[in-house]
Amino acid sequence: MTATNLPASSGNGAGPAVSVSSDIPHLDVDPFSIEFFADPYPTHELLRETGPVVYLDKWNVYAVARHAEVHAVLNDPGTFCSSRGVGLSDFAKEKPWRPQSIILEADPPAHTRTRAVLNQVLSASVMRPLRERFAAAADAKVDELLARKSFDAIADLAEAFPMSVFPDAMGLKQEGRENLLPYAGLVFNAFGPPNQLRQDAIDRSAPHQSYVAAQCQRENLAPEGFGGCIHARADSGDITEAEAPLLVRSLLSAGIDTTVNGIGAAVYCLARFPAQLARLRQDPTLSRNAFEEAIRFESPVQTFFRTTTRDVEISGHRIGEGEKVLMFLGAANRDPRRWENADHYDINRKTSGHVGYGSGIHMCVGQLVARLEGEVMMAALARKVRTIEITGPVKRRYNNTLRGLESLPVTMVPA
Ligand code: 8QM
Image (cartoon, rainbow, N blue to C red; front, top):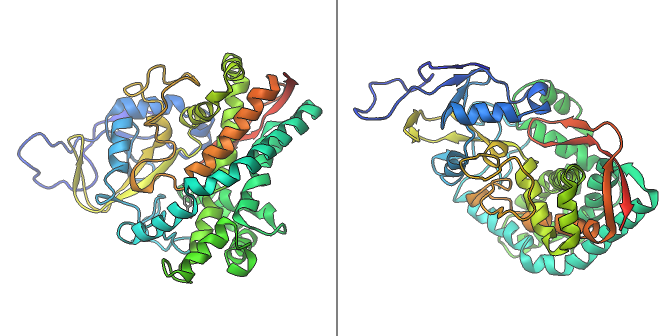
């Protein structure tokens, strides 16, 4: 992991007369390797400290890891576009592995219309009647797990709770739901480079892809769920009948593994930092912020790419048109330039400004659902649990984009 000072690989024209350098430092780190996933933090620091923009020779991409630059790239979608894909693959050069998302992988004005529909389908007024159901499910789940005493906080809590509320809220039938997590794992691996993780996921994807394609159809969705509400927007002419299944697919892609890893992160934080669990128990009104801080601290979605639409400068460094820029959300969320005690999980922290949900026009459209799930689970733990002890080997789950655990054996003692 050495920093060198080579000229940037593209756009080496005569250049402007003043103060724009093409001396972007190169790093030979692979942020999609198992060794990196096992402990990304020293490399995050190297990425941030090497410069505001670096070039990663392993994948031929630019990268930003400081909060200021990640935020700036996210908030200039005209220059840093999504329509050429938000993974490593450039859709201008390579065919996407599945039909392109019409919200995630779209730019204004196309994005504006599909985004407006999902904004309404997942709005605050839609959350109000869901809250009671989600809270009752979280309470029941924690009661069940306290009766068992020892269990796996990933399979039995972080996966089981979202799986008990989100598929029903979508309006999915019971049959085949076991495909949802493997499909999402595939989607998030596919944003990464053509490594073993991505290839294996795509090789095994056929049954998961055919399940999801079928569940996106109107006849397989309850009319009152998120899925049915999307299809109803075709009746009112806001989207076409061909677009509705693709927007349902977006929710099936992004709506479950994200909250699994968010809730997994939150429980892992409470288990590692018992003083924070004690504070949460003293004041359960901190539940929503305790979840938000876990999103900042662990950043379940670690990275996204953009593609430059023109020659551009980032903090005085020139990048050519058609270049991929990798954004390290997880590194920005621990940038000491932005956060005091960045590496501390602190449920009283002012978390606003974290980029765990992104920022700008693409910022997580499902954030109210995610926060609702997270908040009600943290509130159930705050009221019902005295201690969480880690009682066995903590196993990490490796994915090109998602950060989270495979297994977290715990014993919980009731309050
Ligand atoms: C990630 O398919 C989609 O539209 C889609 C897939 C994945 C995400 C978002 C949207 C960011 C959570």
